[in-house]
Image (cartoon, rainbow, N blue to C red; front, side):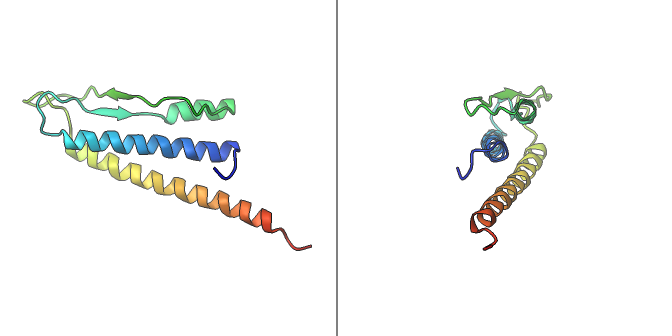
Length: 118
């Protein structure tokens, strides 16, 4: 980690949550045809928001998957492929945004380290 400030910690925490969400979504897609499989979701944004309001991000906080209450099909499986693909695309876009935020933060630090030469 370049800097241990709250912004950088939040970016790292969000990236970890988004990576976990990608894994869970990929698992849902992989099991879309398995009888009685129940889709799961990762929701970490509320935890992140609360931690930011407290100005205290705990790196040890876990992001647990919870099963969805979506209705099941005839085989008992409740994975909606369209929903999963949309979730995967949205997650990828959010990951891109976090990378851009981190790169911006790193650029600010590089500029500050170079100084103005005065």
